[in-house]
Image 1: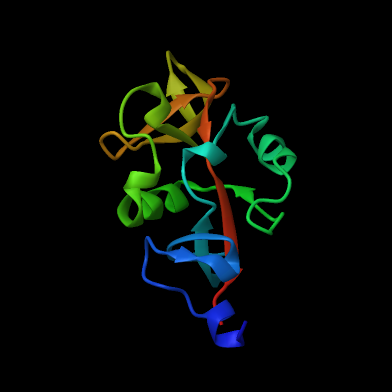
Image 2 (image 1 turned 30 degrees about the vertical axis):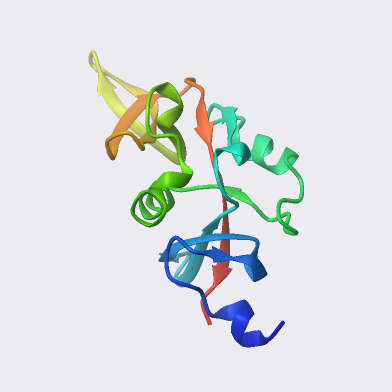
Length: 145
């Protein structure tokens, strides 16, 4: 395996075997550009709420030779929707993916903790109650060189 193969991504939506998944795009994360990957299709999803998603993904252990998979951000889900929508369920409740984005929303005169979800059926971004369980796809980040 060459350094070029490890650090040069394929086209979005294509497998990147050297990095253990499907490349969905590049985005700024923690002040640097990172390549974003998913491990494959919905067989890698876990059902969780925001408080259990990270540990549920960690509990999956090694996927495709890598164990540094994380609970993805809303931006990651949007990249995946554009690059590889066919790797996600597209109908019904299981088309909804939970992001790691927490927000506070004003409901009935008080602030309520909510989470952002992304619906692969129609591309909608929705604020959902904090405790609701949804599908969570692991994501992996590779620092762009």
